[in-house]
Image 1 (cartoon, rainbow, N blue to C red):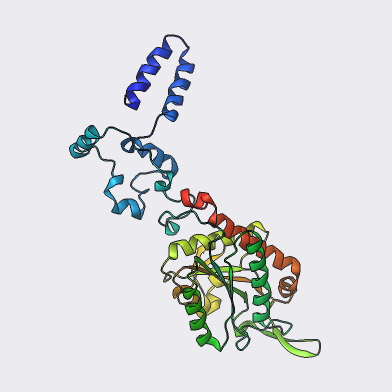
Image 2 (cartoon, rainbow, N blue to C red; image 1 turned 135 degrees about the horizontal axis):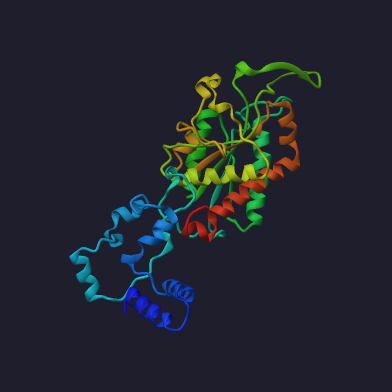
Length: 339
């Protein structure tokens, strides 16, 4: 018996015995318990995403089996095979992300097999920025990356790989991309600590040595590249990192939105989470997996440098990254995406 026919009969029977309110409750219960046919599933999609036209995912657009039109040919097929098919929630796509972040339905990941590459930004030969107290960015990056690796492995992500590269500047970038691609990683996260353009730097002395600083800017930031082969997943992962940083009480660096940054100005994709777009970053655009870059904080800011040097701040950031990876990998990602 079709669902609607059954509901009508059930409603008629119930109306003879119970008040109207109970009839409505019984009818609603029947709707929940009965299987959902493909042709009647549009209402469920509307509940999650609004218009059914807007709700179509790339996979749905390519596959005619999800078409819900009641054309004669479709009705004939249903007459031949009346057995209803249940609709999988995975077909509804991610919920709670802006349209730019929508991606094909992901499979559930097994933490024991899920491979994350933690790229230690810069090298011992090309140390990156120098902090207000004359410590290299590479040293900050390595300490934080190791702590993130430790936490991820403790949470069951046994295939986490720490990527250390040798060499100078651009050549080292090519090496790290090649290494990450050879590892066949599922996610790539490059760890960095921020500085500012030279025009903002001021001179001071620390422990008898000349140094430079800028206390004008502070905060973390997350970058993605639109030229990454899986930009949608990259952005979704970056959003999770930014959300976790914010949940830990951290604020993102807002200077990249300002015209005074000149060529360092970047488009802000989400003003709540601090995710920026930086299309030309080699480690983001040339990696074959979803990739993001985290600037954990400013080491040229004298106050923030002290915080970034502390085990407490490293614990906060590594916990946030680990929570983001876990949320990315939880079973609900394979059903509805990050919420």
